[in-house]
Image 1 (cartoon, rainbow over the protein chains, first blue to last red):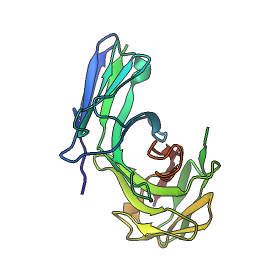
Image 2: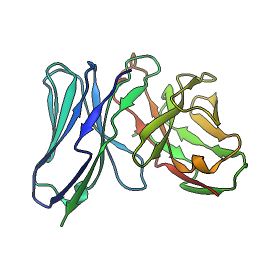
Image 3: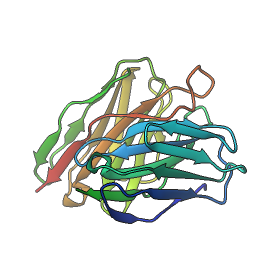
Image 4: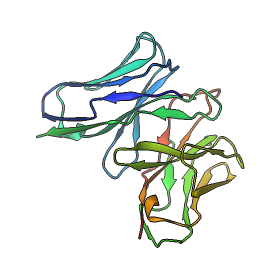
Length: 112
Length: 117
């Protein structure tokens, strides 16, 4: 069974600060996704990384896939209150059924 | 953009009732999934389907069943609702990996918050 561990579990910061969230596994994943979920809504896909060492940027968010494809990080620069939410990483989905493994998430609160 | 639509945002049902949660996607995705999400427990897979009339048990299928009669629709059925099934239910869909765009992750619906009293 492939497992994904996210850290930290909770993060509360002031507006304007930078932060990094981590997603780690002992298993190799062929691709990894990051989602953001706002309270009362479903998760929304932010990015998919597929190549070891890959870096993708989405405005103030920077996603990196580890060289060995076992880990990933999400870095947010100058966080804003609108970044508040639950951040989930997920991997796998290579079988025909496309079933992914999800981490337990990092709950981010950005205070004005 | 593909959309996944869940029929209800909020539901309140009584213990013992049979409950149907409906999910429809509009982009010809093969795979569909039902998860429940509870504080401290993360997303737990109930059932998934990779084709019409095909279904596979996830990690917590007890007390649930599913139906997929058409490609775009995946229904979750609580045979006899119990209070421990009070939860946020999330439906998702995805392309199979062999198709263009496969391995690109899930598209989730907005969720159904079910309360069983």
